[in-house]
Length: 90
Image 1 (cartoon, rainbow, N blue to C red):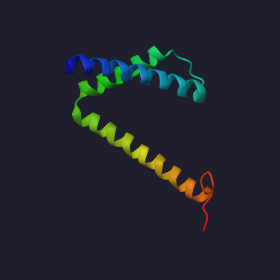
Image 2: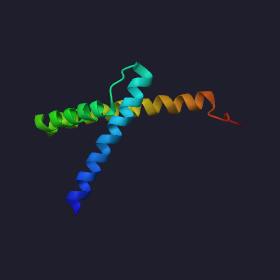
Image 3: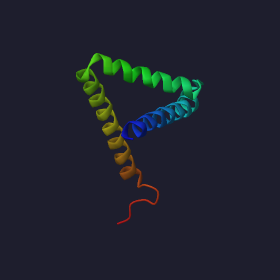
Image 4: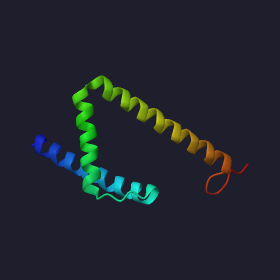
C-alpha cells in the first residue's frame, strides 16, 4: 500500500512541478513549453543528481536553500521598509 501511495505522490508532484514551471517560465521569460516537457526536465535533473551521488545532490540542495533564505530575507526587509499592506504604525 505504501508503495502505491508513494508512486501516486511522485506522479502528482511531477505534474504539479511541470504545471508551475510552465506558468512561471511562460509568464516571466516567455518560454512556452507544455507542462509535460517541464515535468520531464525536472525528472531528468532529479535522475542525474541521483545518479551522480548524494554529495552533489546535497550541495545543490544547500545552494537552493541558501538562495531561498536570501530571497526571504530580501522580502522581509522590503516589507519592513515599505510598511507592508497597511504600513507600520507606532
